[in-house]
Length: 78
Image (tube, rainbow, N blue to C red; front, side, top):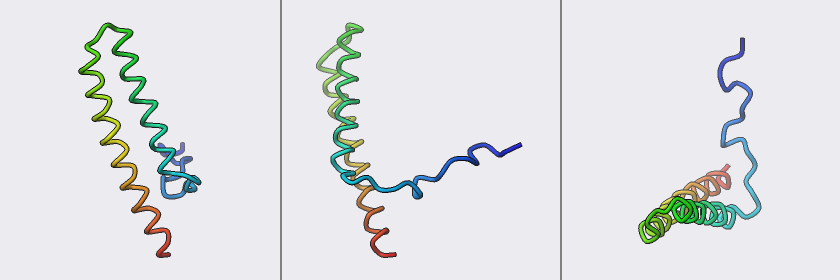
């Protein structure tokens, strides 16, 4: 029996995309739009959903940019 997750590669083993910063903006932008659309479809408060989506976009994009910068910097040192 194989241990859980033994067939997966770690995040460090994955190749770095050609444009990691742009890809992060696109991914989190789409997810922020999904938050707003979901709120509109379910009859939620759109102002609250917009604020939440903007906060999500800012935090998620900032975190991923920080991680990309760290990973790219560490990759150049080796």
